[in-house]
Length: 434
Image (cartoon, rainbow, N blue to C red; front, side, top):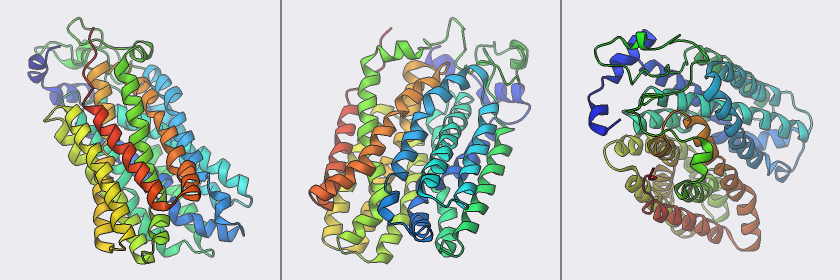
């Protein structure tokens, strides 16, 4: 389907014919679900210390909890994406609510260190399911606004944690942290289960139906949970090519994007997991360190929405390249102002670095849809998203090792260099040829 013919299609009207309500409710459900699971990634640094004190553990004993979270969250994406593209989002989303909610509730009753690792990893699988199911479901209804749609969902994943952090910081003492974890787990579980009831895929051929026909009449079982996850015309002869995962893996563009994904996520996850430790170890005050951790998810959320929307109005490759380059420069500025012990400069640098790193989770799924089509988008993006595992290894364990061998500024500067390399790689991308 050509760009001109796509621009003539009233996607909103067709979606309303199929759903019976506005397609934006799919985005709203996805955003709520993403916001609810955000504490797993962004609140861990606030609950780590009270959990360690309660179990009389050295905090270093929990050093790999965050790394395992990233591994299980990213590693679950491919099998989840494969199943989701064939059977729809709702059943998986219901399972995700049980896992993500149960993980936090279970933490409230953990008595051994292995309980923490098991429960947080279990919750990470739930987070991975929500991430794949919610974002891709909303994306399938918006072939005309991929960047904005993905930006809204991924913004909620980042910024949503800002609503939890004040509650956690005010109550996460040894005496009350178990109540905090239990309450958060119940909210996560119930909220995701309710959101799952809203999600559904567009039916095959909903875009390919003629303008003069009712879109709901061009499909079978339009609201069926098992409807194939297709957009852009499904099997229509006018539709762009729909790459399977095997076909995608044979393109050089995928492998370049995979390297870029690893590099960008490595820099960003390093900043997310270590910003408090970096600030404290270079001599900044505890107040500055806490402020850095608080503004980080807000900047991440706003960056995903703003850059995602801009990418709908310009070519995504340029948006990606500029964004990652500015992220790298922002990380270098974090090092500079941190070593100089300039609090305002440090906080501004954290905002800049995070604002321009976080759009990776908006831009990459949009580019995958642009390059490889929407029919297998969940599976295809899940393969790319697995690069977050290696980024998490760098942001967690490798960064800690680098600090022990060199220093905090050197380790962070290497993270900034990775982001710069990711940005340069974006300018080499172009759409695969048939």
